[in-house]
Image (cartoon, rainbow, N blue to C red; front, top):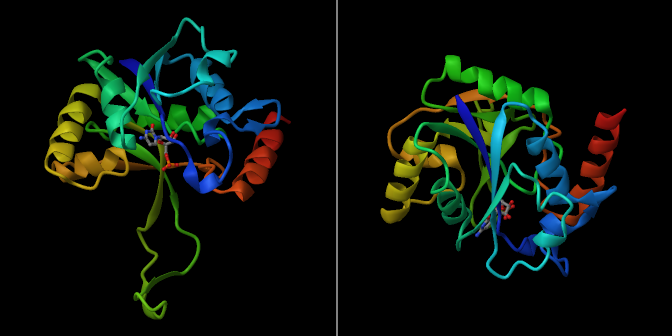
Length: 226
Ligand code: C5P
């Protein structure tokens, strides 16, 4: 298998409330995106890493990884799915892609290995996911609980998400053209009637979304380094 990583990094991270896009915030010794790219660039099975950047990005070229021979940059789009689609245009027809959020810097190589190996079982692709731990509630618009949602078979979808490039490209572009709400790669495949596999991933593979998450990510990276 030819395996290519795609990193959507074209967002502005408005929920962080920071001056610069969140993927460029400092986390321990380097940027969030730097950690994410290091993990993917150093994985022996990954041939190429395609990163989708905001057209107004001013920070990427200053990263130490920017000139890495395995790295290629493309201009991203309006939504995450548009950014992934523009990166997919550079992925070879017979390759498989690992799509991974720039904002998840704590990814472990063992989780990548597990996901890649899962393709033997899940021939149409799979995602990393973590089982839901808390009791789940549904509320109405007034903030009153209307239901306790059964936790069995309920998962947090993580990344990477691993699919054949040609099939993801087709389904993602069809789903977007049809106006479907697509928040991850699996949802585009589901839209097309495919059932992706679930591979249990580490719960510390968090997405840095709010300022508090930076402290958690810092702890996770430090404990992984020990
Ligand atoms: O905002 P959120 O955390 O959901 O974004 C997930 C990932 O998608 C981030 O790495 C972000 O940079 C990326 N993204 C993108 N293009 C967009 C919006 C988000 O590549 N238009």
